[in-house]
Amino acid sequence: NGDNAANELTRVLKVRRLALNNFSENNIKPGEPMATLEESLAPIYFFHRYQTAAAVKVIGGLNYTYALRGDGQVPTSFVPPAEQKAALSAVLETINPQTLALREELIQLIPPRPLGYSRSRETVKIRTGLTFDPIASAEAAADMSVSMLLRPERASRLVEYHSRNANQPGLEYVLDELIDATWKSKPLQGYEGELRNAVKAVTLKNLIYLVSDNTASEQARAIAYAKLRELKLWANNQSKAGWDTNEKASLQYAVFQIEQFEANPEAFKRMAPLS
Image: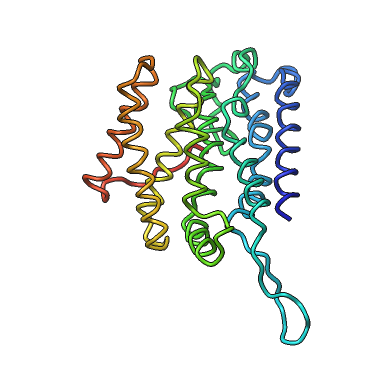
C-alpha cells in the first residue's frame, strides 16, 4: 500500500531523528576510542535505508498477483496516483538538508581514527583525509535515495504507465519534483548550505547517469535529457543573478559539468557511491 509506505517512512525518519538527537559518547563502551562512535552512528544515520526502498517501489510501481486463469484475482493494477505522490514526497524528505544534518556537538565528538582502527564497511568513505566527514555521510544517504528513484527500469515504467493512463505520474513529474526539491530549493547558509550542495550534486550526477543508461527506454532517456538541458539553462541564468559566491560557484559548476557531458558523453563514468 503506497499510503502505508509513505507514512511508515515518515515515522521511521522521526525515530531516526530522535535517535540522532540522543546520540552521545554513551553509544560506545568506556575506554573505547571516541573515533569508534562513527561505527555506532552509521546504522542510525542510515536507519531509513530499507523503508526508503519500500517507498520508492511505490513510484512507478504496479500492484500484481500471480493469478491463475479462473481464480478471480486481478493480475495487475496501477498504484493510485495519490499514493505515488505521497511516497515521492516522503522520499524527497530523506534528502532534505535538515534531515541529513548532524548536531555540531556530535560532529565534534568524533576525532580521526587512531592507529589500528582502519576504516571498514561500517564507516562511510570520506573526502577529508583523516577527519570525520559529515558532508560525505549526507552525500551517501542522498545518493541512496536518488539513485533508487532514478533507476532506469523505474524511469521506463513511469513513461509507459503515464502513456497508458494520463493520471499516472510520469517521469517528467518525478524529475520536476526532484529538481524543485534540490536545485530550485531555497539557498541555505553554512553547514546546511553545504549539505544542500552535496544533494544537488548527487541529483545532477544521477540525472546524467539516467540519460547515459542504455537499459532505460529511449523516451525515458529523452525526457531526462530534456530536463538536463532545462537545468543547464536555468542554472546559467541563475548564476548571473545576485546570489552569493558559494551559490554562484555551484550553479556555474553545474553548467560546466552538463556541457562536459554533452561534449563527450562517453567520458562521463558512473562513480561509486560513498558508502
